[in-house]
Length: 215
Image 1 (cartoon, rainbow, N blue to C red):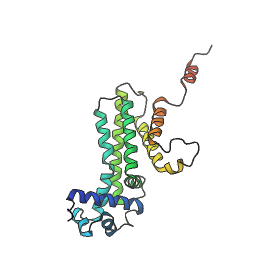
Image 2 (cartoon, rainbow, N blue to C red):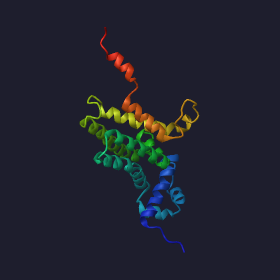
Image 3 (cartoon, rainbow, N blue to C red):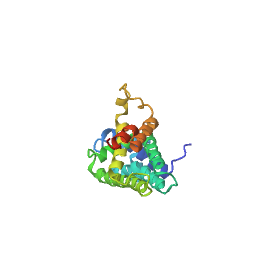
Image 4 (cartoon, rainbow, N blue to C red):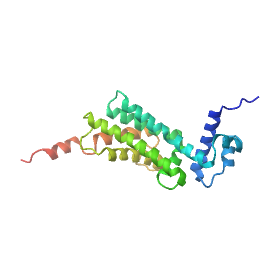
């Protein structure tokens, strides 16, 4: 005899199936029947948990983005250096994105204005909140004297987010480029990206020579 799934687990199965299908085909192309079939439940069961397809879509968008903000907010309160907080945030982002590729693709579809209108605004709101948490991390580093006082925290947050999203989106292409040596290892990419972010591009020797007084 099969044990019925709890409401929570049943709803989660529906959310997971919907996220995968929405990411593949977009909101308009996916039917509730397809979602129910993918989740292994009846169409009536979908409507038991979610009053409409739009309501399900909004729940998918919300669940797609919760982890990052929660994790980063915890980092803000942690007793760690700002560099280590940044390192842990980037690692978390990669782990979460590659563990949930369909969910990530759906979120990126909405953020970059090519998805369903009803889902775009919630995605933008969550993106804004997540973005501001990362900005707060950089501001905290400035207040501690660990990051440059003249650093623009919003630009720094955008650079980090762009580098993470670009790697996720183009990883398959990067694997075919001989000069790229970290496509198989997001952790290695994250460390090298962080090194550039924290230490810059200019060598210490060149910087010292450039700043030395002329004789």
